[in-house]
Length: 480
Image (cartoon, rainbow, N blue to C red; front, top):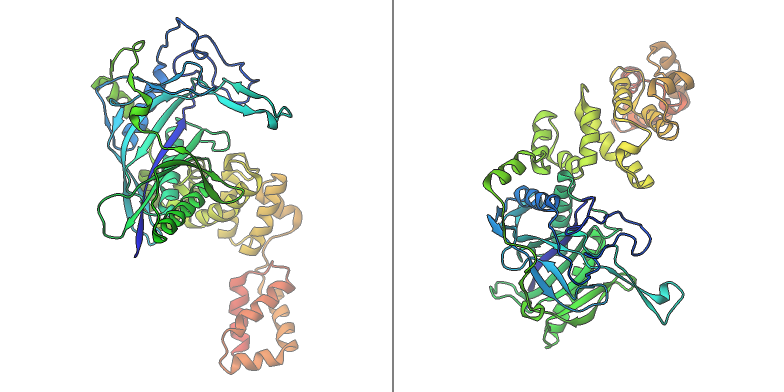
């Protein structure tokens, strides 16, 4: 029997506001334990929460950017559960009246087809604290609670169960991350927990409409872990069913060291949390004027930018998608392409060497020594015939290591391309005379030998000869 996966993702996004959702404490990462706390986020008796308007604005931005309906009336609820890092004994969240519902995210599949992943809801909530087990601090008999994170504003973005593979789940999360970065509502730092994801995974016989029993895999904080965890969970459930067993509804954790998911506890249902309206926060209204003002503030989003790059820079769909997957990369390309004669060449360098440096140095493209203006100048030198593509590689590495301008590097190192036909002819004559067998092969119809001769001439001139001139001279002399 052939099975298919049914997957829905719940993504928690830490909003990059300066203060917490219901108090004025800082949200800065890395402060000493419990430094960013006050009676409100510590859950002291008698204190009252006050909603941070910046949290509401960012929630509305995300809802609008993903095509959701923004609720005219919304409220907060208490989600009751006990855990040491939840000082109040409940979390302020949203249950039956979230700020945004509906909407969708469109992903591009491997074959180039587009798929729409529906969104169920977007809602606001506060984060819990952090429990630190003593063995990590040299005190195995103790546990410690850091409440700096308690009250940090979160958005929970819940997808419909429209995802059918681990690869689709990864593409969905990548697209969602890009949208959030374009909106500048979160730094989306997955290592610091600003973007983390739970996956609800089930399987069913192919063609069956009813869903199978799902397991929830909690707290993946990288695209690779998300993909690997889902792949394992699909394989695990398939094996259970194939062997005559029954998948149970439960919460599981992904163990990246062993590349497996492990059972954590039985899956909670909504009634387990005993939701009820938060009595200290009134039901509130987001007016149409407010929503319109937020909509007017939205930046150009990834899909719109991709379409513009295809249109304005005549880029292939693949290039435009790679460049717009990150706002930082898109901004770098656009700055470099200003006034460039051939934006496609700029695109090739950004997608290749610039992204390579970004990965190697673990930094943003804007922080590289190679500025957009320097890249544009280097490509201009190629267009003018001053340097060849091979020499450009040398110039680029020198720019990356020293931050020097390309024209200065070319002048200092004498890298100007040789276009003088007489000096190139001299080298060609030497190489032809030294390789009679290859000459005979070319004359016998083996045209690929021409490439070998070009390589020999380029090597002899240390890459400085103009490849176009070399090709022309070789064709003339070999055909004589």
